[in-house]
Image (cartoon, rainbow, N blue to C red; front, side, top):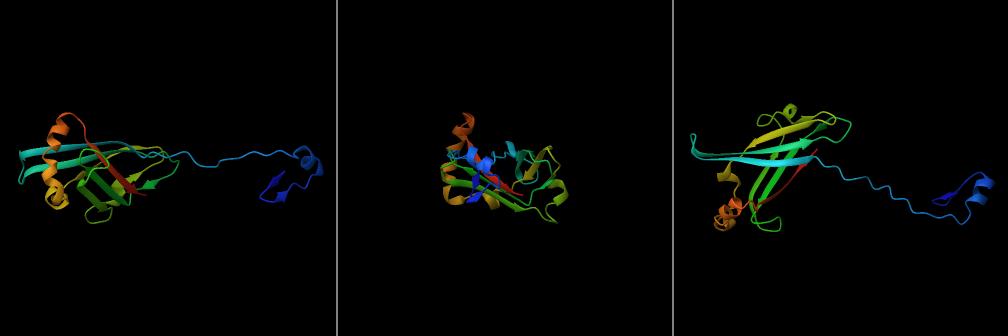
Length: 150
């Protein structure tokens, strides 16, 4: 048997495996951490007149502790290839975010919630297109993309 130019020390194994050739793919299966993304939008309420919270449902598929170090969520107009109309990016660090709240035990499910600041995080040069987003939301044709660093 030959692996990367190294031969077996057994002549019997070499003779039996002569001409044997096969491909092996050691590519790991994809790991899925994000299982759901929802948002609560409040208009004409609270101190500022509005409020927005994103809820990220996560699953830790690993047999070990996982710590979220960064959250990066973008909302795109119409679909994932459309322009970014909202960008939420935070490093999980004190004092704004307690890292202990963003830790998942092995195979744990957890919902993390993030308060949004639309006045700071909206991409204003495409916001005029976002008024058409209301029609898409009404028909549930909205796509969001994002990522987290572990």
